[in-house]
Length: 152
Image 1: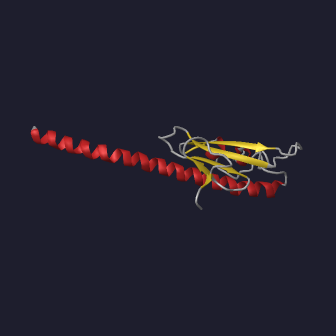
Image 2: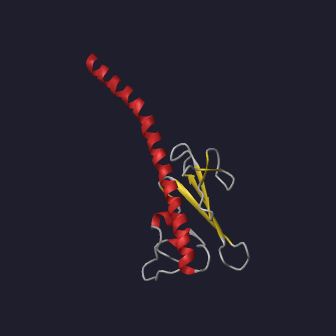
């Protein structure tokens, strides 16, 4: 009986040491996936602007897969997967804002914030992207245009 208690104690100690590392690894993977998703958005925005010659996309759903019996076009460009187009992916929430700078109905600029769904659990860093294609980060609150750029 004593040997069994010792084995259980050892297993609990190993588990206590391993779980924080596992959670930290999961957060790091989610952050890397968020940065990758922002790079994808930056790339497809250039393609969208070139393909449709009407500025940037008005929203993430415009970059996504068209519904059944709907043609590919500026409202559903089929450039990103449905999960990213929904705005939630790998523990991050993607908030897209198209900006009409000239008031002519054309989206001249855009911003995307990638925020952890549960800060400290699904990710630690907040990310920001705009039409300059520079991804920025913040540790404390949603990142913005003056936040520190991530290393390339």
